Structures are given as structure tokens and as C-alpha cells.
Length: 310
Ligand SMILES: [Zn+2]
Image (cartoon, rainbow, N blue to C red; front, side):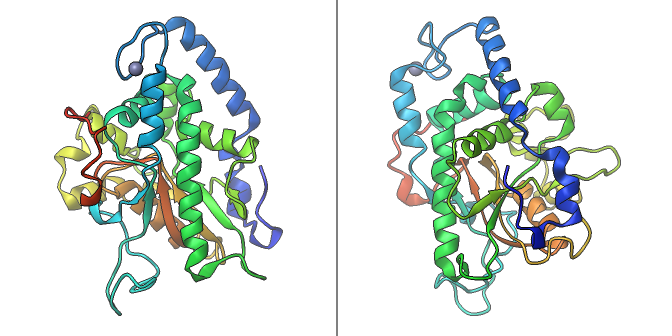
């Protein structure tokens, strides 16, 4: 993993070493996948076809579903404001715009089923179909940010890709960090957008023993207690508020970030990640996800929509 240029390598970044995506993480993921390939009954996670975890037809559908990028910020009510208020020609002066979130596709149909199988059912063998989806979202989001007037000029620091941290509970349950495995593989293959560095600057904050409720847990509506689905708008925000930290104020001053997550639902998780980064002095330029739960009206023709969303 490339380190931030030394002027930007804060004490926090060094302390974040324990969240670094070591090569062994990818190796462990591969070993895990091999084990699961033996243990899991093999059938297509989308259509149920025998003897393959994703049949060729469904693989093609996922590929198409994951290359329909759209900006999902208007449909996620809990996203924070953009730092470009009224900027980029999309708003009037003084208007508060939500943080821009580029989604590779819609969380529905085959893409949703593959994401769920990969994240929650041990199908790390599906990483190969998700890696290009994530890479495409990152490239589009970076192109947008760097085309917005904050680009890599002389003296402008590299854009830092900051993954949303998984919770200890989720990691223990899964045995791997889904987003981390994908990012690590992209980095190993030099497939991250040019001019970016990957740094896990955010870590979970200790807060009364509570852990972050991730949107996928929300979607599954299984949290063992209160699901975010059952909470109101302010309740969802409170449920994740203060669960992440990126260090003391000023430790990330001068650093430009793009938050990376897998699925966008209400935006509460990205909002908390953004809050933590900004509290440490970083500038958050936007976010990128592989799928978002709602699509703009122009995407209504998506025939891959799932009539029974998870
Ligand atoms: Zn299939």
C-alpha cells in the first residue's frame, strides 16, 4: 500500500496501520473462498442454476447492472452537506447540496443478490465480478471530483480513498472484510484510479460498547435488536453518530478524501464517516458505492429490477 506523501502522513494515519489492507488479507480471503467453495452447496446465487456460484447469464446481468452509474445523493436523506455549496453549477448560491455519491448501479436484482451473497453468505468467490463494479464507481467518482476544479495540480495532495470501516462484530461473524478485500485486490492489480491512494483513515470509535449498524444489516432487517429500518430519520442518525473516528481535530488537515462504501441506503453510514473525517480536518470531496437502493427516475427502464427486493 502506498503511503500518503510524508507531509500528509499524520500520527493518525500511522496509527491506522492496523486497518491497513495487508497482502495477507487478500491471501486469507482466497483461502476462505477455497474453503467455502467446498462447504457451500454450489448453485447460482441469482437464479439457482446448479454447479456454479454465478452462471454466465447472471454474471452478464450483474456486469450490466454494475455499469449503470448514477448519482444517488438525492435519494439518501441522511447524507451530509457537500463542501461545494451551490457549486458545480448544480445549485443556486447559498443552497445546501448533499454530498455527491456516485453509485455503480442500483441495489436490485442480480447485483443486489450477488452483493448480499458476497457480504453476508461467505461467497468471496464472487469478488471477481464485483471488483470491476467497484473500480468503475471509483474511476467515475474520481473523474468527477478532479474535474470539479480541485484536481491534481502542483501542490494539490493526492485524493485519498477512505473505506468505511467494518465493525468488529461483522468481521468476527464473516471472517473477512468484504470492502477491504475488493479494495486490496484492486490495489494489488494497480486498478485504483490514477492519482489516488488508499488509506483506511477511519476506525470504529469506542462508544458504550455499541457498534455501527451497517446499511446491509438494515436491508436484512436483522440486527438482533433495533434495526435502522424501524428507526426514524433522527433515530438512524443517532444510531451511528459517534461510532467512527479519524483522529483529533487537525490531524488530517490538508487531506482530500473520497469515502468508499459498498451499498448506500439512507446515507447514515457515509454521513458518519464524513463527520469523522471532517472532525479531523480532512476535506471530503464525495463518495463512491457499488450500489444504491434507489435510482433516479431516468433509471426506471432498468429491467433488472428485483420485484422482491431483499
Ligand atoms: Zn444464474
